[in-house]
Amino acid sequence: MLSKEADTDARKTNPDPAEVGKIRQADPALCRADLFGLYLLHAVFLDGPPRPERPRRHLYQPPAHWENFAEIFKRMPMFSYVRNTLIVSLLPVFGQLFSAPMIAYSLTKVPWKGAKYAFPIILATMMIPWQVTQIPMFATWAKLGLVNTFVPLTLPSFFGWAYYIYLTRQFVKGLPDSVIEAARIDGAGELRILYTIVYPMCKPVLTTIAVLVFMGCWNDLNGPLLFLQRSEKYTLSIGLQMFLTGTQNEWDLLMAASALFTLPLVIIFFLAQKQILGGISTTSGLK
Image 1 (cartoon, rainbow, N blue to C red):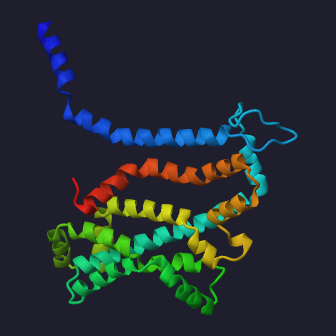
Image 2: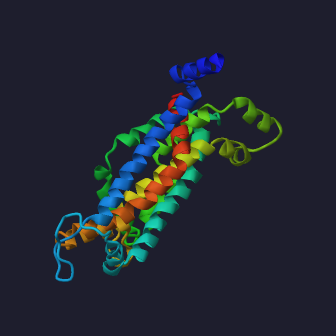
């Protein structure tokens, strides 16, 4: 009996490091869940300006105002906005998953003389602000007759973005050369090595890139605002901005629309947060 009590006291004073690690990993996720839960409650219970059919007594007036979400769908073409936003968010994901590993593989595992010069040039493009290039980009796409289409928002991703090329390059650089050399000795070409060996080994960083690209394109306002001029082409970010400027202090509806806009991102992040943190820690050299 004394030995069991001593073991219990020892576990309380010296907890298992593995259990402590699990608790530390869970704490940020629980905090983010609590914060979004508070935000969602704020959107549900927030009451808007007084109306004849619903006089306001308090700012947060029970019961929950679920009718705010139905009112959003009446005032905004939400399904059209969601469709357009999915188009400009999913296609860049496929573009980056196609281009970033290919460029990273050519910079690290394919021997050619220009690799050591190409990578610094790619990194240098990250220092050019988007505001500097938006006018030349708009003029170029306008001459091609592609303004008011989704092409300017999706096609550039199939040629790679510097930041995601950098992430993938750091990961591919750490892959063992022996596996690739063995495949070359067996007669495999570079494309076959890329798609059958490198791609499966890059699953953590590719998941990270997919989530980051989707979240960035989902939240993007400048790109759609620059290239899309017809209302049937508008995305959720433009629709939310128009709703913000068009409403008269109807904060209850604005909070409901913001909650709907944010909900898919929160769900995706919670489902893929382990892969995101693993991919970033691997590419940055953190343990």
